[in-house]
Image 1 (cartoon, rainbow, N blue to C red):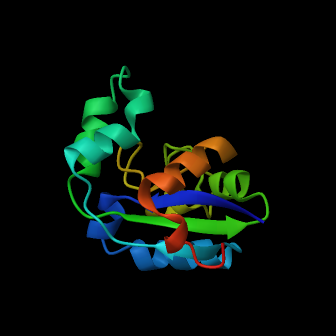
Image 2: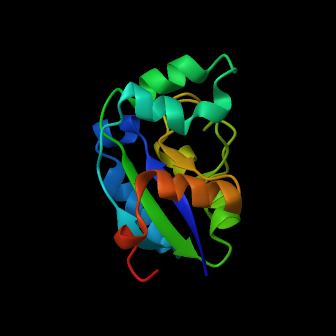
Image 3: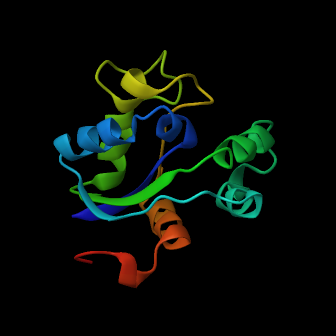
Length: 139
């Protein structure tokens, strides 16, 4: 079993889709090991997405991620990182496979409902950004 980070983004929380997304993830075989609702400050969002600082979408991304509450969660499954990325689909919901989280619940490429870690290494860093060892159930 391995772990990864997912964040139900402010667009999905505001639209009342968080429960459906969580149900979708559990039905796909993920176990929630920790979860919380939070509202990121500009500093927190900037630090979390610092890897994208030089990209043109960085400032709009930080603005979006601070626009309302989000729900970071630690998910566990065999091959959690690639499985979650497959489960959520392509960044652009127009390109996402049928039945994926983004195809079902995302509004656009920018308002795409969910974040998922892209590697085991980044998953470890991202999990520790939001959660302490003490927060992880069954770790």
